[in-house]
Length: 401
Image (tube, rainbow, N blue to C red; front, top):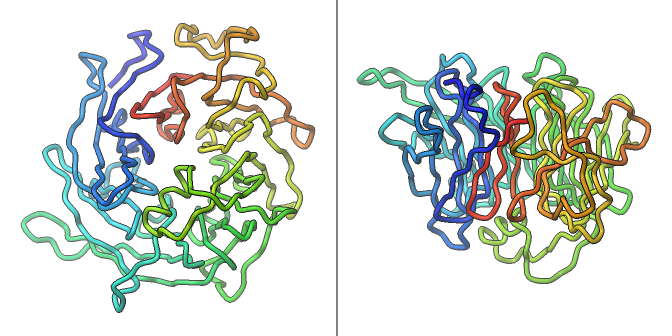
């Protein structure tokens, strides 16, 4: 599918519920396909597979299936060559693997490492290893990370059965673990990092799990919510630090998801920042991105550049320093941009930063896009780096940058 001749910069899809989790498909024959997860504060939730129609230039829903509780994360199998089954993974109460076809999506396996109990520790996130798609890692509020091995069994009726087993489980943090991500360093298979409520970033090596390395600790021990590795330079990673906590009913989507699964959690994040780390210089951030004045909800590195990163979330205009440029739907493809006037940028922004001047301070983003609501998630398409997806309210938008 080629949409570059249509000159359209933004495509929008409206779901019947609040959009939280989402992910781009990386299969070469499914380029403009995304999976979306609902955020409904009850047991019954949904996942939709949507795709962009070439003829109508509109998103359509391919299929919808039920999901217990909101999905804390959704990922397509990282199979850019299309050699594996078309699989989708979701996390919530458990890790589930789904097989997607043109007509239906069916549950392939449910991965549960606590089968001796009627209770489960909710999964806050997971990651799918890009080098070895047979490996997945999950993070949980029970302080552990679990590495799963995915297996394709015997062929029955031309369909490969998919199953999984626990390769290892380890106590990763002193408190809840909020995110996990595999690193491309060392071959891209064995190293991963995690962040959690204890305010630390820890690195692990599957070949040497007897110890881990703490590469950063928040000075005030505030929780770190998300973790994202640079796609081009595995020395750099970004994390989101909360600047404060209050014990009041939970409002943020991230902690709110856990509160639905585990009602005793009542922590509410206040203003946050994005911290850039260099694993070669542990403990000291090489950059801080401070323009967001409320909880940052998403971070995504550019798949094709080591010095560009996108952050998203509410950015109240009364507190925000003005970014230099505003990305608009009418911006021409020669990358000329329009300067921001004091009244042209509102809140609810996705910001793109150029960090190549590190370790000098990064004061302003280079591009900004203002959505019509608070942005809950941002995803930069790995196989087509001209496109970024954002989710806000009940809407998905993909933006050509």
